[in-house]
Length: 276
Ligand code: DGL
Image (cartoon, rainbow, N blue to C red; front, side, top):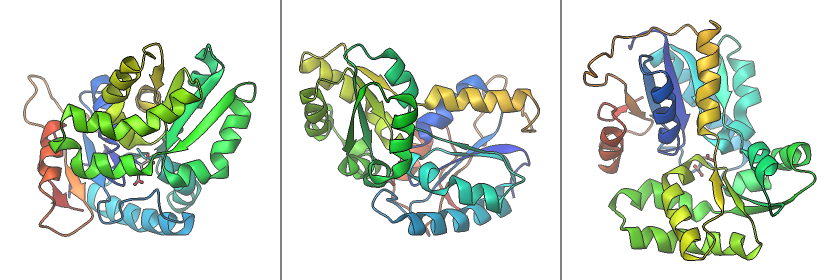
């Protein structure tokens, strides 16, 4: 059992790690644990019912092991499909979801054409159309499923060369640039790991003015707000002098884990993987 009053970040895999990193920058003394549902991965090819069932089961395990003060669903697919069911099942816990950053992209586009890269499920979900109708009704929005990139990040990213990453993102970026987008919304958290590669490839294509937009700062700000107004009561630890992190990295599968997860945990200052 871990300390009461932590914030738990949850994703189907490693996609939510950049969200945890940004939140930590803002709230360095708040314990933040990470749970990757590697057994359920990937979510983007599953039906809403399959995703909801997984989420409800995982949440029960998270609550009994970590006793979190708040849970960030650092996964667009899970947020879109499962937040209502999670909130209904756990009304005493604040859930913070990840929503595609369509609003800031639509507000800042010059060309009036915005691209959205997401999972198969997110692209097909009517929720995304509602968001577009609400925040981007006066511009053109190109939705693009880039499910293949999710597995690339989860399985190959850490061992990949710059050239391999360029080749991985190229077909997706090419297709959006052909539609003349000047904003690319990363609406799958896994793609945040490829942000630099996407930007570099845009530059190579002579589209260096294209801006990549995501929701990580918004999520961190929301968390900070809930801490400040007392909605979330977290137990702040003394991290002065930056001692070794005591934040956990938990997986839903049985050990032995894929060795890449130990490297991911280390890269984001988390303890070596354990089973949830
Ligand atoms: N990282 C997740 C998202 O933001 C899901 C990726 C997947 O498991 O397909 O949508």
